[in-house]
Image 1: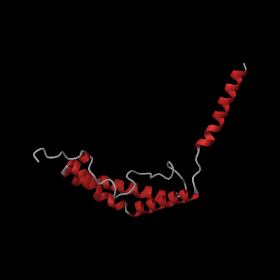
Image 2 (image 1 turned 30 degrees about the horizontal axis):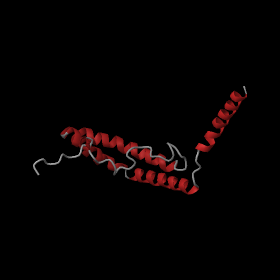
Image 3 (image 1 turned 30 degrees about the vertical axis):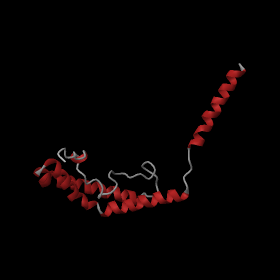
Image 4 (image 1 turned 180 degrees about the vertical axis):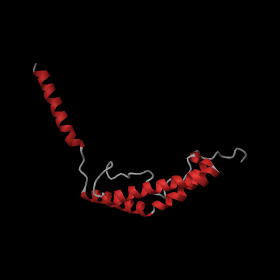
Length: 131
């Protein structure tokens, strides 16, 4: 009986203490750095959101051909431009709030200049067998 009581008390103490030991306190410098990165990312996305129009036109044109360059790409670019601009303004206004995640980007890729590689060109080129 004593043994069962001792095991239960030990288990209860581990359950109660474990969450407090698992949470690591963030240093104030790290918090300030992440806030400043979120602010800079928000300002950058707000002012560079118009670059989504040529970006989406080029990416969609690579995937779909002439129809992507002529119609679908520019429309997709306008939509993504509005979306990136709203996300940028949101991150700029709420840079003090550690959401989503822990100051993580609200949009992927985080900046308009990232993600220019085509989805089709993800495989590395094959080496020449004749050389």
